[in-house]
Length: 558
Image (cartoon, rainbow, N blue to C red; front, side, top):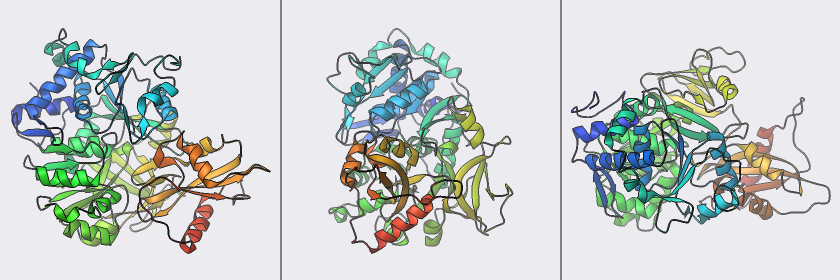
């Protein structure tokens, strides 16, 4: 029995696996996980039993401490079970964005050296099994490029030949026994890597962010404390579990305080509203576009949302009119704003629950406890004065252990004395509020998704008609930013914008496909020969201001 057994939450300074064990001891009959549309209702004791059962099955299938296990699935119940089952045996959960395509998944599996992939049939029109076949990951054309991948486990009915059914994990570990799980769990340390999340970088090559239990459990604890969570709270979790927003701020933020999770398998505004009303949820998360979609659902007025109290909005600054509607119309008076990076587990700052409208719409709040931040002048390396802009640096327990198998990139991101360079331009005002003012790094953030321009540029340079390309972000009322591409064609070549988007669609996740394409004869350059993306962005945004207004809503890129 771990050191927190028989104590009531909140819990911190425990491993991910130990957190669930503590909850099962302290709140055995308290509802932990509810999928009301599927009729699933597990108490903390039942969730612990299921996680241990699956942990035994994974051991029986050959998964052991330190193994990387990639999970490519929506917010299905198995995802949360795996988060704890893998942690109990010391295996490392590798999260996979549900929008990725074959090329991207193949890179992730190779770079992470994953021994196991757990997947579902597909999502939003993308057949995962076809993508895996196309990538040479499964099937008769399996490539030799995946020497570490020993098994693919399938969640769902009618498991394809050659894949292992997830359901059989419940019986595969019968010969293993709980004592082996106990032995492995007791050997897992607070600072052992337990989770890897892939984040895009300016190089265009996604990097595996290595996170420990100390990183993510304690970060969830502080964010949950900022929301004043107790076991009486119920979180409608509609952000994806593959993202830190879901599996850390969501799962661990709630569970460190004994709150119940009511996940939605994939974001659908009507399903969110139904879940809140049915389960009397007290908290709700999302990026601004999600809250707008919920408010604009045609049936919004039919739902009783008066149980709501608090939540977190992140991913982009929220316009004041939208925040006012969230607070007043959605009954979320204690809505908070949070900011962070995957590399910081992710939370760095949060607004108070009683913050002013200005604080919630113009700032990202104040630094969380046990974390330091500073604003550094990139030209001098010196700390900037109060109110002056510079690059935001962070230090403390939340900073990642590094990028997997990328020592040079790790050294470039973290100074010798432990400061993480965020790449975000920011200032800290006299009241201690952080304001994000731009980015030092060349990154697009669309609806909370980080997008590396170079990754898209590399794909487009593979088109026979494209001589060169520069990808950048332009302002979007709905997503914060949209992807735009300036394309220079080869002499005599002819192609339209829809063909450019179509070429990307089969090779990149949908959210990375350029919404806007401009054909140019050349690029604005610096004296040293570098493309001035800010000039491309400025010129493009001027054009968009004078062009006929197009609906800035979710949908296929135009």
